[in-house]
Structures are given as structure tokens and as C-alpha cells.
Amino acid sequence: MHRQMTTLDFLDRGVDVYGDTVGVVAHDGTEYTYAEFGERVDRAAAAFSDLGIKEGDRVALLSPNTHWFLETLFAINVLGAISVPLNYRLIPEDYEYILDDCGAQAVIADREYAEKVEAIRDQVPATAFVANPADRVDGDWRDYESLLAGADPGEVERSDIDEDDPATINYTSGTTGDPKGVVRTHRTEHYHALITAHHTEITDDDAYLWTLPMFHVNGWGYPYVITGVGGKHVCQRHFDAAGAFERIHAHDVTYLCGAPTVLDSLIDHYQNTGVAATGEKPVRIATAASPPPEATIRTVEDELGWNILHVYGLTETGPLITTSNSPRRIESQGRFAIKTRQGHAMLGTELRVVDEDGEDVPADDETMGEIVVRGNQVMDRYWNKPERTHEAFNDRVDGWFHTGDFASIDERRMISIKDRKKDIIISGGENISSVEVEDALYNHRDIERVAVIGVPHEKWGETPKAIVVSASGADLTEEGVIEFARDNLAHYKCPTVVEFVDDLPETSTGKIRKVELREAHDDPVG
Image (cartoon, rainbow, N blue to C red; front, side, top):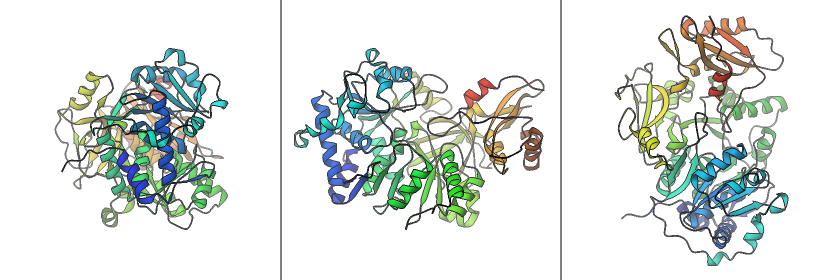
């Protein structure tokens, strides 16, 4: 039997099985059962239909982590329309590009960010503009809650969705060029949610704290995962460590996600305040973006008592394609040997590490190659970019998505990310992983944050440069950092130049903008 796989399957199960259970807790503490949440989804869908939104239309969604983001995400798909979640940290010119590129028919925005769209609304194709609430926004915007109050949830008719229809378009960060619209179908979203639920062991007893931005690859699929299993969504508009711990205690949060920068903030707050690390139930946290240093994993697990899961992926791949959540491997190999790695391919996912000729590199855990992947969670295409799509799937190996990430692979088929292709440092003909150097430097107690990049060198071509944020009260020197590195790394991998800064530029998802750093630190040395 063949049954269409859609994002609405997760909503239906949540409402049907857990209708009388609290499913969503708003930022202000307001609680909605799954039955109430489902009705609000239908009201939103009816309201959007009245605005003229129909099957295939692109609807941009600009909001922090709110309950209405969740209901709007589902409501858009009820109509067979396509959601386009927007990064709220962008500038008006970025929104102008994205809204024009996807041909958005409508924009639904939070009052914090609607003014950025208002600034360029005459330059974009959208004709419907909804704000929550509209009275906090300049310009002609319809009010979200008023639209829902005036809508009849019984009038909405679901579109006849095919699993291969686009469900969402997620735009990449565009750090190396114009953002690309990643088209994800109902099938890719559905399959990704299933394997994520399995590998992260989500159940109806979980309360999930929204610290991960909901716009980021649709919040890694957790709107579907948590709803489908009947867990509880706990919304926090913007991450701050104090607010996160308050919600952990108030709602007995059991699961959250966070880039290494989020982990660092939670650790700092815990150590500085003595706040209880958990409610009545244990907490686990999934981390991605850049690999967490061993020292961070040790602190999270030994001091906070949380279980850390390391996952990996890209916007184009679901995102999740690997996990280090392997109790058997941890027991036999040791937790740091496993949890500092990106891990095994997830269920139904094929993963290889290949050289420039498309051949598999030796499984020696040393030889680096590019990660290529095949799986039902991998994107359908880039929106309106057939050439870029073809290149992404056929660069070294035909029919495999090319991640641009360099890794090694061991005999257990576990990968370890070494670097982005563009971030590998080639010094004197030797490939140096900037991630490996950063991980070693993070073991220095006085280094709070660090980024390692390659800078021009007259003799070696490139040499590693460490850009360091010192811990408060620390008295670090360039010589001291280099000496520490030489005590812990092969000498050719060590920084020859160190610069101290107050902070490092980041994307909204916690990744350090190394392109920006390389542009600012391109003076030759040596």
C-alpha cells in the first residue's frame, strides 16, 4: 500500500491522540492543548485562504520562537502553500532578495521584525501582509489574532497534497554568495522527522525547549517531531540562559538543542549562579553547527549532568544525516572518543567520504575527503537554480549530494568533521584542519572562544592564525597560546600568529563567519 507522506500527518496524530494534553506553552506561559492548537491551525488556514493564499503560493514567515510560528507553519501546508521561514537577523535588502527570488505572495511577520519588511514592501511581489500584533507596526498590516478570531475553522478545506509537492523553502546563509532556496518536499520533511524522532528518542513524556531558531531548517524538523509524538513545545522567543533555566524548572524540560555557543552560555550561567541544572526529570541536549570541544562536552555532562547528543547535517540534507548517539560505542570506545565525532549515518542514509576523483578514502580515521550523502531527507533542489542543483549532486560522484565538508572516516563508519572545504589550511603542502587546532586550543582554561584561519605566508603559502577571545580576567599572550598549541599538536599544525579580539562574528545559528575573518585578516606574515 502506498500512502502520501505529508507534514500534516504529525499534526493529525498530535490532535487525534493527545487532544486533551497540553501541547504548546507560549513564551508568556499561556498553555494550549493539542485540540486548541489544532483549532488555531485551522483558523489560521481559513484566514489565510480568505486573504487569497492558495495551493503552491509561497508564504514568508518572519518570527522568533513563538507558538504562532508553529501554528502558521502547519496552516500554510493545510492550504497546500509553501512556507518560507526567514532568518530574523537579516537586513531589509536580504529580505528583498529572498522575497523576490521565491516570488512570495504573502508575508506574516512578528512585530519585532515587520518594519524590516515594511522598508522594502514596494519592491517585493507580496500583496498580503500580516503582523502579530498589527498595532505595534507602522504601515498597512492585517492583525494576526483578529484574522483568526474572524475565521471559521470549519470552512477550511485541505489541499490535495502530493508527497513530492514542496512543503517549504529554506534559504541558506549566503555567506559566500546570494542565498539559495533549498526546496524541501512533504516527503523529505516527513522522512526527516521520523528518523530524527528515532535517533533522538523523543516520546510523549518529553518537554522540548525552543532555543534553536524555528526558522533554521524549520527548527530541524522539531515542529513535526514533537507534535507527532505528543510532546510539549515550550516556547522562548529568544534564547537567554536565565530564561532557559526558568523554563527548564517551570515545565520540567527534558530536551533542547544548542550550538556550542549556546552550551557555553548555559554553562556560564550555571557556574555563576548555582541554579539547579534540571527539573524533576533528566535533561539531554543535541548540539550541532561547529563540533563542540571535548572540554565543553565534559562540563555539560559532568557538571550539569545532562546527556549530550552530537548530530550533523546541512540545510540541504534535512538537516540531520549523522548522530553520535551510540550507547554501545560509547561503552566500548569511551564517551569523548564518540561524542566529539559526528558519528554514524542515520537510518536509511548512505554516506561516503571521497577524494577528488570520487573514490572512497581509506577508513583510517586520518585521510580527509569530502562527505557525500544520499537519503530521503536530502533536498529536492535549489529553487530556480538548476545549474547549482546539478553541481551539488554531481561534482565528484554522480547522484550524491556534495556537502562541502571535509572529514575522515574510521573502520566503524563513523565520521569526524575536519573542516569545510574552503576552511582547510594548506601550509607547506600539508592539509591542516582548523577545527582540530581550535579543539586543542579550547582546552586552555583562559580561552573563551577561538577561530583558526589560514593567512598568507611568504614561505609556506598559508599559516594558521588563531583569533582568540580571552576569558574574563585572563592574561593571555601570543607566545603563551603558541606554546600551549605546540605542547598539544604537531608543530606544523600550530598557529604562528595569534590575535586577541573582544568577540567573533557569528551566523544566527552559532557558526563563526570565517569568510568575514579571512577578509579582515589577509595580511601576509613570515
